[in-house]
Length: 498
Ligand code: ZN
Ligand code: MN
Image 1 (cartoon, rainbow, N blue to C red):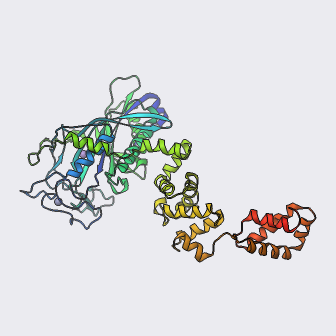
Image 2 (cartoon, rainbow, N blue to C red; image 1 turned 120 degrees about the horizontal axis):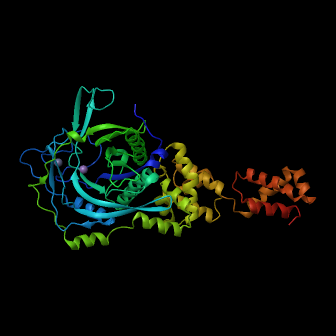
Image 3 (cartoon, rainbow, N blue to C red; image 1 turned 90 degrees about the vertical axis):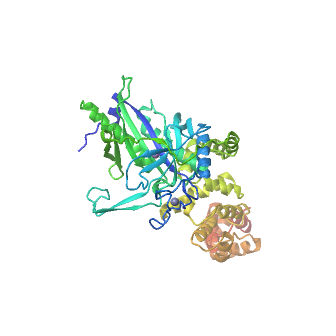
């Protein structure tokens, strides 16, 4: 049972220092050093060859696209790009490492010394980037027979090498200091911004739940008046943004209790548990391996031409921070409205709807109200709803043309989402059109007046408010398809009140 110090109390006495190492699988078609496919989810050990299985005599060749993606990410992180760098062997034994070493980069990373600005509650934090280097992913072990899925208590283990050799970029921050009580939120904001950035660059699908982005979160505490950092722990493979925040919070509360008791924080790796929001010890650094790094003799150095680097820089897309500034102004949004749009995953969808012809206000209205509600009710992502941005724009165009009112438009959405076809097909099949034929509307009004003699007489006698009941009857008779304002005008005309 671990004692914890309440977060606010811990922060009153200690200052946290963070460091985040993020592994991201690059979205190349083939692996880092061989031609095997990188697709997620193949049958175990079907995406393998002698190179990624580490067979004697096989030789790796660097994937050029992975180098390009790494440079693209490095430039977007304001890094310098090495003129010349090498891969290194990181030697350690693990069953999911078929070569008994990982090809990585050590003292010569391809990208170094950059930064990423992140915003938390209106304040900007500049997160220094120490380095971003290339390496290969490991295979995946499955421990069978135990209760926890961990190796302890398992009867045997299975290993799948499909993931072995998939290109990874590892992005390492400089120590993140002076964030105080904001530390958990700053860590989360950094992971969020990094994910958005890499996604915008098209360099990875950055799906944390599939493991294509995972964070190792380092936390240490020092007494507020101290000048030397405390001992850090490293919580490994944190695989959601929320967990990044929670793991920092928990380590602050736990380490404060250890320090308060006059004990030393152990330098170790730790596991994060989603169900409890707590961490538990992994490897202690006392038995940490000496990796015996040395330059990989089977690969030539990588020396990206300056002209190529500049070509990649010139082709960088609009980055998320710049996009937020542009969208906020162009759509006239408040900070909160923009944040809601981003959190709803609606930014791309609204932008595509605007490109397809809708106004920013109309596009935002449909995605953030009607469609967000539907997505929430169905428990799916907004982007997974079976309606396209073009269809939303088409429905809004019908509203703008006076052929649909809002109520009918919602019925069209209902039909499109139910798979009844395009907006125009749903309008035709369900007969959903505003009654725009004046003669037809007059006929409905006359029938309503005849059927509601009492209300009609009240209007004739000057009680104009009684017209409301007649308008309601017209809307009912037209199944909501009449133009209510025009119906009211006609009713008043027919009853001598216009
Ligand atoms: Zn291979
Ligand atoms: Mn690594």
